[in-house]
Length: 164
Image: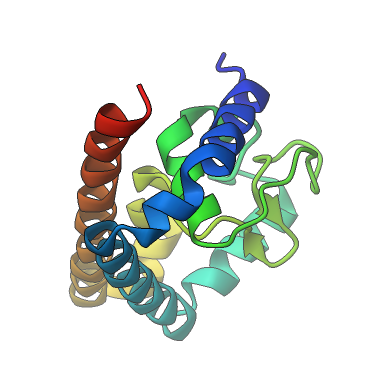
């Protein structure tokens, strides 16, 4: 099991030390902007396709929820740092017992999410969407994931040059 609090603390420390410099880097700032736009496209599609409502219902019912406890252990310091750079306040306490630390009453409290959290379609969602709409969603989500990967790689390079 990952020490999520240690990862959150590490991300906060990096943000405190380098956040302004990272955000002042034109390349990373542009990549973060593109990533936010791509996240917005995915979120919009999730809203319009009733994915958010379906996932929220599943989480409330407690059966088979993908936002189960310990999913937060999949996150790493860099992805948490990206959230801080995007203005997200990362909570230290679980809002919903038995679920992911980052799950709130309105869904995920993070902006930049782990790839599984973005593109996994359970059988219920696949049925809801149908094949064509599911493929469309995977395409939109894939764009978000690629943007996120690009930000992560640039941020890792920046940190290797400046922080480590």
